[in-house]
Amino acid sequence: MKVHPERARARRAIAAAAALAVMVVAPVAAQQRDTVATTDDPRVGLKAGTGNTAEISIQNMRLVSWTPKPAAFDTTAGLAFVNSDLAFRGNYLYQGNFSGFSIWDISDPASPKMLSAVRCATDQGDPSIYGNLLFISAESPRSRNDCGMDGVQDGADRMRGVRIFDVSDPRNPKLIKNVQTCRGSHTHTIVPHPTDSRTIYIYVGGSSNVRDASEMPECSDGSVEENPNTAQYRVDIIKVPLDAPEQAAVVGYTRVFEGLPRAPGRAGVAITEGAETNPRFAQGPRGCHDLTSYPAFNLIAGSCGSFGILLDAKNPEKPVRLDAKSDLNFSLWHTAVFSNDAKTVVFTDEWGGGTQPRCREGDPVRLGGNTILTIDNGRMTQHGYVKMLAAQTETENCVSHNGGLIPVPGRDIMVQGWYQGGVNVIDFTDPTNPIEIAWFDRGPLSDSELIIGGSWGAYWYNGYIYSSEMARGLDVLELVPSEYLSQNEIDAAKLVIMEEYNPQARPQVTWPAAFPVVRSYLDQLVRGNGLPAARTREIAAALDAAEQATGSVRAERLNQLAAALDRDAAGAADAERVRAMAAAVRDLANASR
Image 1 (cartoon, rainbow, N blue to C red):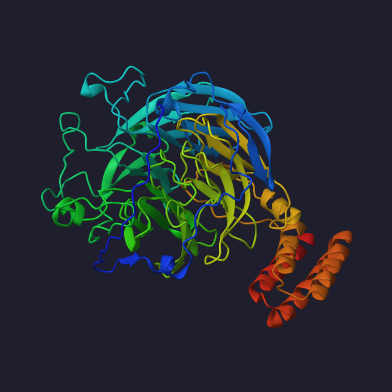
Image 2 (cartoon, rainbow, N blue to C red):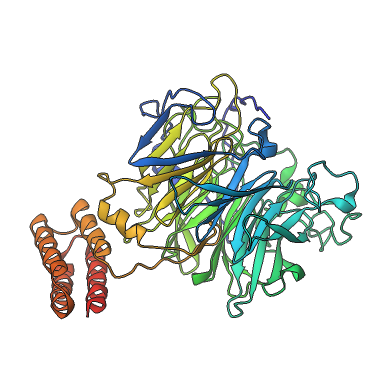
């Protein structure tokens, strides 16, 4: 499908008020400059082209490989066959598509090998993997129970919910269960059971209309006041017994939006006449677009239309809302990324729904980008905004979309897809001053009309960045050293090996005892002037001497260095980082005995 660009509406101020304990956020925007996209950037003016023929701009990373979409997924049929999200397990990459999914062997990132391409109408086909079970979201009215591609004539054949495939043989995936839900599954999130390792939960992000009761008698529409059993204003929860996944079923739902008012509008987003008195709108969100779980901290960040919410998921069947934020500058809270320590969360705003050009010259950074919030005792505080600032054209759909952390010790760094705005890497260690440190971008698919494409999502997995290109296929990228990121930091990140990774289920990262980890902290102290230059040179020399030694001699030298770093911390400009380095040195000393 080809989509012609929509001209931006004239912005107008809309006054609104918050209610209850919900904070409506606009102050950050008032405190910082209304930065807009710039034309003074190497990514501006790239020549158009399909496949890998478009002109490329790349900074502080390299393109390892590009692999086109498999023939099963037509490259010219628009949204019906675009690629969607990614999931990872071992040497396998699972790539969703609006009409099914692909399984790739990525044991050689320079040459991914397609193992299977399964045609199965879904929309939007977001995947998650758990062991040998692949979960696929389906919300399209054309989705069939049998995965057929011919549409639905009889409602009894319709599938809207979460599909479960057995992918123990990646060359021959088998559909073993369709879990039907009332609003389908736009996205979904795996939440492990806190004590039962043989049970997981699936939180369903349903954003479509409620299906007819003739298809599912338990489904009904309306406001909570009008209909306490309405399928709106809730998150459905599926329970999956791993020893019998064919018995997976919806076990309930949670109304985590209870008490939230309708969020106010913002400049550029009109409030429907009468909405303030319409019970449906007065109740706030009707569902969540995305839910990002962080099992290690029992937290879930919900991107729920007009609100970003924080949930306590100690009891996965009955999550509790801790906090909620609304922002006059956000039109659609879309997805979230936690920092490794769960003290910060980045929310994205999908202004324009992903099919519109929202990164043009003059488009403000506060609209269609990210906002950064810190978390303290279950409460969120907003700090600032960050957006890909290279002006894109009217023929490039572009807005903030999916991404995840890059595991650099001592820093909060994420990689992210921006549709046809490409892929970029953002350092948000300082939540009030995030910076872009790397990027990869192609020219538009067309310079005469808007054709949907670009990076749906980009993720770091075991040393490489994988980007799901909606129209073009699969890109593999690798970071290279720069003034913003040292070789030691890259090497330390590559020490983190994940057996499984679902971007909407955040794994907690720990680093092994290793010299690149220690030197990462040292490089950061040098870059940020956290210690005097003369002292960092002495530390570097001490590390070199310790590395040249072995056994107990190495351990003794490292323990001496750790003790010296403890003393350094007392007067350091960046005492916290010095202490983190001392801890990493001690870990290395213990591993050297």
